[in-house]
Image 1 (cartoon, rainbow, N blue to C red):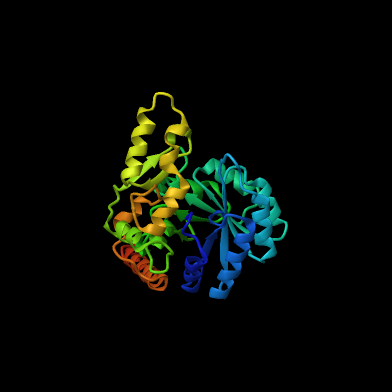
Image 2: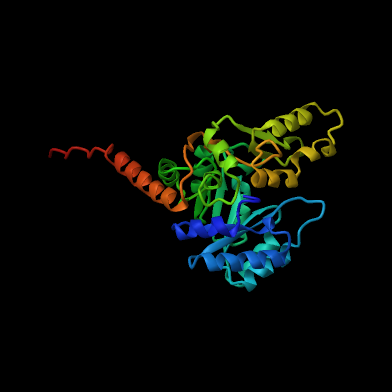
Length: 311
């Protein structure tokens, strides 16, 4: 949710009954994150979380300083993701912060469990953004999680309605995490053209980039993503510099500001295929609850009691 997880969306999700999340690294400095957290507090009295994602970078952010801001501002829930989260998790757990850690494999989930995280977000191959390198979809990954983990987990990747929530619960999850679906809501602080592009898209409209460098990302399949994929496949040198201008974060951010969906790469998942409207967060969550209840009720009616045995 880079360039999407601002106070506007986080507060709207929390006010609607979900857990809204501010994306820490959307803010250029820890001081800016502090301002964004304070802004969100004015927009909701409900709990909200902050995401801190640790990814490879030429000049890594000061993750420790971002974590300290979270602590200073009294945020009680943090979503972590990425490489070597141990030191940040330890710092946050020292003040009893609730940690939700995102994983794309059971091996990483077991490692996070040993670190003492409170919840896990199990991200199947259907997710947008960083999908990992193992390509295990949620039908298998969630069942493996239920078999292997003692820590409760939520499901992420491919969820956008109540039927999906009911399915995740049936597979062993205790809830769902949604990214692309929340991008396509009235309160999402991105250009309306992007939301309309999501509604118009199908489940085929994503592209996987950066696999050559083992940093695979699922992105919206626009002109620049297709051009970048061609370079990635055909490059003789295999140097990242050849593709770098195409995957520039600045260009991606401009998409959300200008509404030119082909200006840069931006993340979206195949769940776009089931997204048909741009509701408010409140309407969306109420609808998901009703759909899930209806699905559970429908499935329960499939169970026919065994006839009483005759003695």
